[in-house]
Image 1 (cartoon, protein in one colour):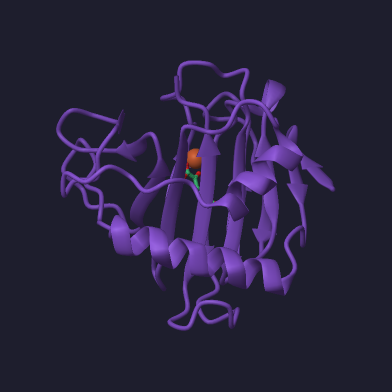
Image 2 (spheres, protein in one colour):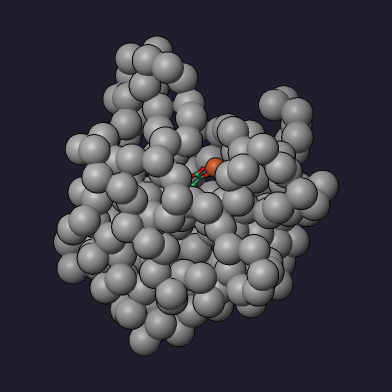
Amino acid sequence: MIEINGVEVHKGWLDRAAQEAMAGDLRRVALAAPFFQPVTPWGKPMSVRMTAAGKYGWMTGKGGYHYAARHPSGVAWPPIPESVLAVWRRFVSAERMPDCCLVNYYGEKARMGLHRDADEADFSWPVLSISLGDPGLFRIGGTERGDPTRSVLLESGDVVLMGGPARLVHHGVDRIRFGGSTLLPKGGRINLTCRVVD
Ligand SMILES: O=C(O)CCC(=O)C(=O)O
Ligand SMILES: [Fe+2]
């Protein structure tokens, strides 16, 4: 385990077979709740595509950032796959399951600006992230926006925990190494973040 500004990075947690099984589970999630391109409250389309599983999905739009019980198409979000819940049970809790598994897909030019995950009600629950597919350069700062940052390459099968004093650190993805993994047939990177919302 590597620790960066209090964030735990568990390299290579899922082996290839587990990564393939989880990628298959996520294909089924995306069939029920297709990836869409979020637009920021300021009208700018985000470069990642998103969907979600669980009770809530994270949405953005004119009303700002919020959690919503339905996909933009009106369907409820599909359940969080058991393969994902198993990782949550191992790292976070066997009693309380996450309300949201946000699924981000990064194509060749996608990135995610530095931000904090702060739309949840109770910050005593960590955010658990799982990366699949192409490597992505993950930047980790501090709780204040101007704090110094350090970067780590997140590869397929890596698990990250932002919890405790590091629950509200700034983080983002500067770029991905498109084609750097053979896991996803069309390339790109998937990142899952599991959150307790309310
Ligand atoms: O893609 C990642 O590794 C991080 C994603 C993220 O920070 C988020 O969805 O809030
Ligand atoms: Fe985040």
